[in-house]
Image (cartoon, rainbow, N blue to C red; front, top):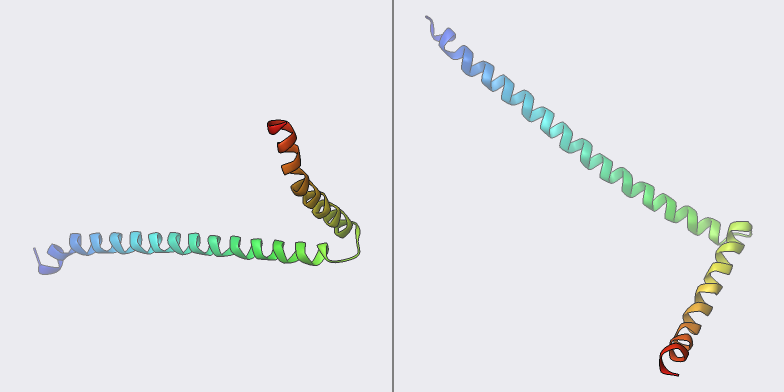
Length: 87
């Protein structure tokens, strides 16, 4: 048996480990890219919401009405609690 024949199992194992390492690193990189992609989607949605809420269209009017409703609800909630629990 020659010296190269003795090294062949070791070289095969090293090649298998290298392939597994590269596959694992590719999986990690794909996961990182997915998280980064989700961040871009969130920022794009927030920016589009801001642009459309500040315009003159139907969505801007609905958004403004929702803001006014929430402000009125927040102002009236303590009064309702006082009436319900203290009187």
